[in-house]
Length: 303
Length: 300
Image (cartoon, rainbow over all chains, first blue to last red; front, side, top):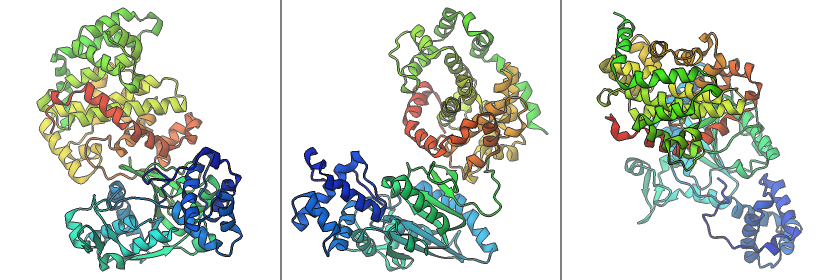
């Protein structure tokens, strides 16, 4: 989950400052590493995220900070810290119930018999850009709730990845307050969480046991190539700040990461139009999925 | 026993509902005239004749979906909306009136929201692909499900059970109709469309919008309404219940039929179109709620 919105108070760099060519170079460094691109009108966001790191490492100009990112011995560590600043998002559990409805009523009834016929009884899900864990824990609850019904006799696991170390640490801890749990029912809270302190709950070991957390840069070809055999990939509001070339590359990976018949879900307002034409766009009530069609598919939905 | 045979005499009996023929007949004759021969003042008079319809035209012309002009007179509203939209509104209203409040089997507001949304999406799609008559697409979208009203009137109790079954099973309405009634709203709608002398293309939309390839003459229009109907049902503008649908629109035969006539369609971003529909939902809901006031209906 990547969010460069206004949810958090940010230091406002003045317009004079933004004209410093060092910002353009920092932008290029970020882009090369992560695929995240700040166009001209969003440079102020980059500048404000840099401002935090600049005060942390006690440098005064973007030029000096660029030096930290490129020539200093600590550059890899600093890049990582800057990426942590850039890729922060806030979300909550059960944010996208139409996607879960589609899984339950259309997608699993379609995928499960096909896999059974091939002798498979295992389901793999991937939350790519899992931020602080709300999405993978939601999926874990969904799967566990279905394990007595649709998924009886099936095993499943969830891979949850993000670029942001801080987010991953929080995700692994699985401690959530009222905001993150606002759409989680009392029943589910009691079943899958334990009290942490007087305001927060912590994900149970059962919930954690089906999720594997890992740091993955979606722009890192060597790592992406090895994530195979996915049935479902969720990548919500991650690609919105990627430029077209990076999006295309990530989509190529996702396509080969998925098994035939698998689905990719993006965020609510994201479209793959002119990004990738191998996926079929499939409409579900209230959500859209991208389908890697099984071999031999010739078209024709349900009227 | 075939329920469909019982319906025909019941449609004839609809004549007995006073407001319908009074409005539909002069309207049908206006529909047939070339635009430059239409007496606009006569249309204004016709609209003014019925205070409810006049009020609805005013509300529509002041809606953001129709350009939002500050119209205060019926004449202003008619000119702002244009003749074809006025006709569409009139037909919608007439249809609305054929069902008494206590007879509704489906949630009336959900039904009109679906019809209006389908009309708007069809018009948008028509404009995008350069279909020559976007207002016809609007009218066809608005009227495509009129068979549902016929079913509601002709066999209220059986229809309520049928809709409940569709709701419980999360299945498409026409499938439930086929199973429980032995016919669909497409067939019963066609009877009413025939009876009211609808144009051939709109009649084909009513009859074939769930079976595009069977449409003999107006396949592009029928296909467009079919796709709009699906899009609406997929975006919370359906019949008011959850349908278990997963639709590859571009893999639909309707899509292929339409692309054949309008190659521009192949370039349409269907994800963006649905996102746009989501964005327009509030406007659509506002128009429907203003035009078809919920309190007029016994909402089940």
